[in-house]
Amino acid sequence: MRRTASGKRNGNAREDGNAMLSIRKIGVIGRTYRHLNRYRQILAVLFKYGFGNLVELLRIDQYLEIGLQVIARKRSEPAERLSGAERVRLAIEDLGPTYIKLGQVLSTRPDLVPPEFVAELARLQDRVPPFPFTEVRRILAAEFSVAPEEIFTRIDEVPLASASIGQVHRAILPDGEAVAVKIQRPGIERLIEVDLEIMLHLATLMQRHIEELSVHRPVRIVEEFARTLEKELDYTIEAASMERVARHFFNDPTVYIPKVFHAASTRRVLTSEYVEGIKISQTEQLEAAGLDRRLITARGADIVLKQVFQHGFFHADPHPGNLFVLPDNVICLVDFGMMGTVERSTREKFVELVDSVVRRDETGTARAFLRLTEWDQEPETGGFERDVADFLDRHLYKPLGEIQLGRLLQHLLELAARHRLRIPADLFLMLKALSTVEGVALVLDPEFDMIARCAPFIRSVLLARFAPQRISEDLFQLATELLEFARQFPRDLGAIARHLRQQKLVLRLEHGGLDNWLATHDQTSNRIAFSIVIAALIIGSALIVISEIPPLLYGISLIGIIGFLAAALMGIWLGKAPADWQLKNALLAIKS
Picture 1 (tube, rainbow, N blue to C red):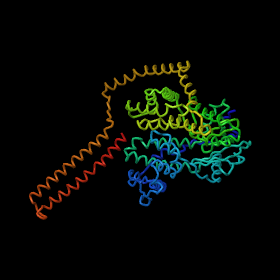
Picture 2 (cartoon, rainbow, N blue to C red):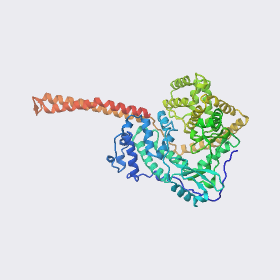
Picture 3 (cartoon, one colour):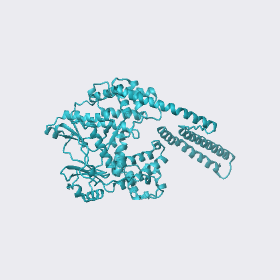
Picture 4 (cartoon, one colour):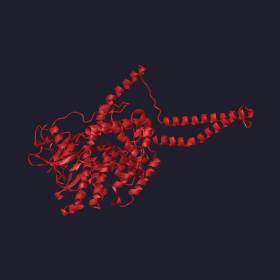
C-alpha cells in the first residue's frame, strides 16, 4: 500500500551542488556594516518592545555607523502590559522569517532558554502573505530550465498554504496525477544570509559585553542555527526524510506517507503526492464521514510511539495541521521539514527513567535523570533527590489515567532548569512530539491515556536489551573496544615516556570559577581604598580648621569646610554604592 518514490519524468531535475548559504561570508563583519537599512529595522523593533537597554549594553554605536537618534526609542503602550516572554515572541514575529525560525529552534532548546520562554516561543507562527504566481512560474522555469507547462499540465494560481520559507500549490502531472508542489519563496536565501550576518554580529557583541549571556556561547548558537536553516532550505533533505519514514511503515496499512516525485523536485521545489483528507482536529467532519475517533486516536499515538521507540527517527512536529485522516481511519502524515533522531542508548536511558518513575523509586529516578541530561556541575544529591520526590508526588501518586504527559514535561523542564541541567535537543524534541500527540489525542478522545499507551513500547525496549542477538552484539562491541584499547595503550605510554625524556611534557592548569571571586575582591579593595581616602580627607580637613588656615569664613577655614563637604559627598556616594555592587554580585552568581 505504501508508495515511496517514483519519477514520471527523466532528466529535467537540475543538479545544484552549490551551498545554500554563504557560511564563510557570515563571519566577515567589519566596523562599518553593509546592511544598514535592515539593521535599523531590527533596532527599531527592539526599542518598540522595550529592549533598548540591550542595545545600550551591546554598545552598538561603537561598531556601527548608525544614527540611533533617528530610531524611535519609545516602547509601545501595549508592550508595557506584556511579560518579557510575550514581548520577545512579538518582537521575533515582527523581525521576519529568519528570526521566527530561530525562535522555533530555541523553543526546542530548554537548555538555553527558561521554561516560560520555551512555552511562549512554541506559539510562534510563520504564516505570511503568498508571493505572486508570476514568481512561481519564474522559479519553476529557472529550476527545471524548461517552461512549467512541460513539468505540470496545470498548476493552481491560488496556493494551498503559504509560510515564511515557501508556499504550496496544487498541480497536475502529464499522466494526470494530482500533486502538491512546495516552492521556495523568492529571495529568501539572500534575506536569511543578511539576517544571519546581523545575528552573528549581535551574538559576538553579546558574548563580548554581557557576561551572563556569554556562558551560553551565542556565537556557536548562531552558527548551529545557520546549519539548521541550510538543511531546511534544501528540499531534497525533506524528500529523503519522507521516503525514510515511508520505508519504516511500508507494511503498515494504517499509515500513509505521500510519495515523492524526484523528476519534478529540486533543492528549491518539492513535488509530492496530493492527498485528500480530513484534518485530524476536525472532529465534526470525522464523525460525518463515519470515521472512528477512538481508533484514529489510538493509531495516531502508535505512529509516533513506533517512530520514537522502534525506529529512532520521528516526525518532530505532529500538530493537527500535519495529520490527516483518510478513508478506513488511515493516518496520513505531511510536512517532514522538522525531524528528530534519538539513538538507541538515549531511548534506553529514557525507558530507565520512566521505569524508575513508575516504580516510584526516587533515588533511581534521580540517577536516571542525571544520565539523560548534561551539566557543568553535578547537582547536590540531597536537594536534587528531594525535588525529584516532590516531582513524583505531584504526578505519580494518583490514578494513571489522570496523569498528563504535557504537564509532566513542563514540570520536568522546571526541575532541570532549577538544577542547571541541560536536556539534549533531540531528547526534548522526542518529549515534545509525545506531548503534542497527547494533546491531539485528548481532543479526539478525552478519556485517552497516553501513559498506558506507552507501556507496551517501553516494555519492548526493556526486554530488547536481554535478547540473545543484542547480548552477542554488545559483547562483540565490548571485545572490539578492549582490543583497540590494548593496542593503543602501549603506544600512548611510549609517547608519554618520550615526552618526559625530551622534557616536552607540559602540565596545564586552568583555574575555574575565579573570575567572580577576583571581581568581588577588586570591588572590596576599591571600597577599602575609597574609605581610607574619605577618612584622610576628614582628618586633614579637621587639622586645617583647627589651624585656622586662611581664607576664613566666619572664623572657620574655607579650605577645611570644602574638605568636609567633599568627604560628606563621597560618603553618601559610598553608602549608595552597595546596591550596585549587590546587583553585580547577583548577576555574577547567576552566571556561575
